[in-house]
Length: 73
Image (cartoon, rainbow, N blue to C red):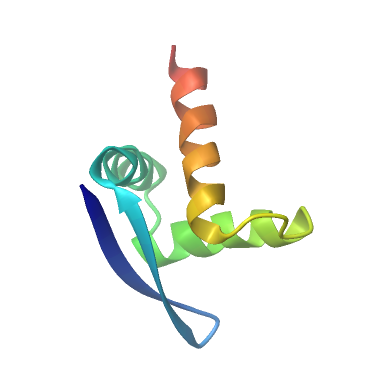
């Protein structure tokens, strides 16, 4: 099931739709980081933009989640 969350990134309101399993990984990473949800997503968006923004934010977050989970194995 897709869940949509809204966030303001640099004054621009946007929403991201991801499967619940990806949000669970992101929520765990946010908790572990001590950052706010908004700050955490902003950091991921900055990483995406540094790479030339070849994919949208939702796709970037899915790939980020995969990498995060792989480092925990």
